[in-house]
Image (cartoon, rainbow, N blue to C red; front, side, top):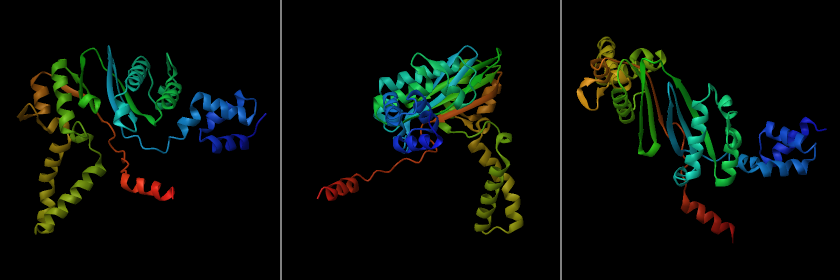
Length: 292
């Protein structure tokens, strides 16, 4: 009915994904024009053309349902869209779908059903409706035991979200830990969680700093162990001074309240995404010159 070269041609023509092009040709019984129309009707062609854009704004959210919780991030191109009610409804809808599932991968999550079709279909239609790139970037589904509690905290209207799991403490203590993590940006829970290559890289920097300070190599080597502990206090949650009482560490605060930290997940919207730097003056001038 149609060949692999037809799929390739449709993909090049519309910018849609290979599987979507295959589906379109199946629906159109191999008719290229009808397949293009099918993709346009589904909003897939329009959505695909926006894939090259940068979506670094957006929101993160946490949804708790009994012993399960999900933390997720959805990105948009502009902060304006992130404040859109349709955008917020999308996040709520997919969050509830995930928290009531056992999804572990993004592929599994995208295939979950909602009142607006699968999450992937809902996303494609939302892109077509709103008119800018929207990206369901990441999520983590967490399940706790009955003797554990969730701590949730959202800052700046969802720009930063933190989900913690504590054993043996109450939800107020867990929320305090989440609030601390939102402010102090720990990368790991304990020093044993820090990868060996990260530690060795930092040790190399510390040793070089000591040598540059005029210390002999053997002395610089001895200084590494002392300074690496300071590094752990900066990046490890349990070793950071607690924001509400800097005289104790977060680990000590939790222990004093009969608990221990089991898990901590911190999402900051757009972290790790290189944001586009628009030069509006150059853009305007190029348009002016192009119209001459």
